[in-house]
Length: 130
Image 1 (tube, rainbow, N blue to C red):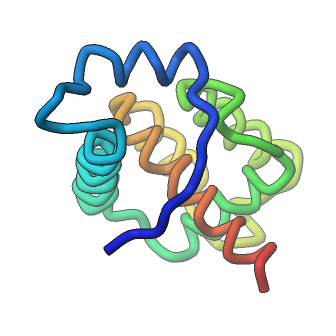
Image 2 (cartoon, rainbow, N blue to C red):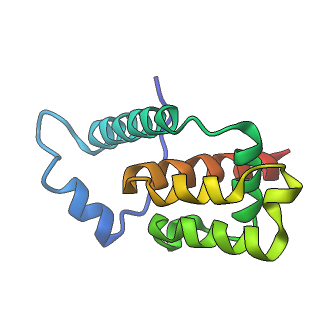
Image 3 (cartoon, rainbow, N blue to C red):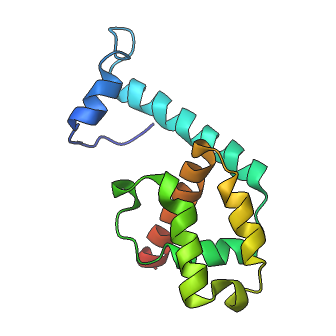
């Protein structure tokens, strides 16, 4: 069983929910289904990426100063990480091949970039909670 909560549905969320909500499946069930699907997409995309722990550490650090990752497109992620590698030598700090990481990130699909952003958000949420 879940817990009851209230949310504010922005126009963007309403446009996602409206065509999916029916008498057979209300808003709560629709959001649950969407959330489960999203989590599965993220899980599959992350598994496909096979990034090393040190590469994740560099990614987390590169994204540490961004408040509210939802406010910018995941498509900007490679540029953000490239800047952090160039300006802060994260590749040297974490002993990774920065050029190789950038090639891999440049080849990522949008879904993979979203999955990377999601994992970074979860990482930083856990860090701020501890």
